[in-house]
Image 1 (cartoon, rainbow, N blue to C red):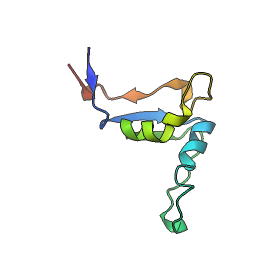
Image 2 (cartoon, one colour):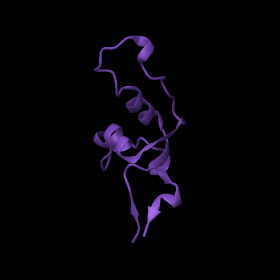
Image 3 (cartoon, rainbow, N blue to C red):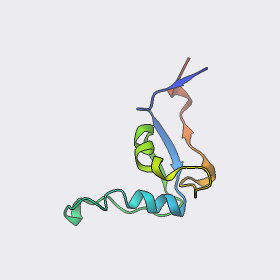
Image 4 (spheres, helix red, strand yellow):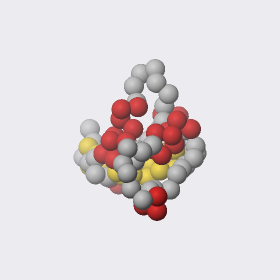
Length: 83
């Protein structure tokens, strides 16, 4: 069995729903517009630490729900796996 540190990076391609979730993550924070992150669209390839993907998308992933990632696929760099 191999292990993977959640501080390592994963890459996903966002669906329309995934882009909506990602764009809404700072909606409850009041800050000047110039500090808001750029909006993304469906098909955007997102590379982030695994814990960050859990934080942003975890509440939106469950059986029977619309998937935020195309094909339910997360990609990892094989060099990040340890024996």
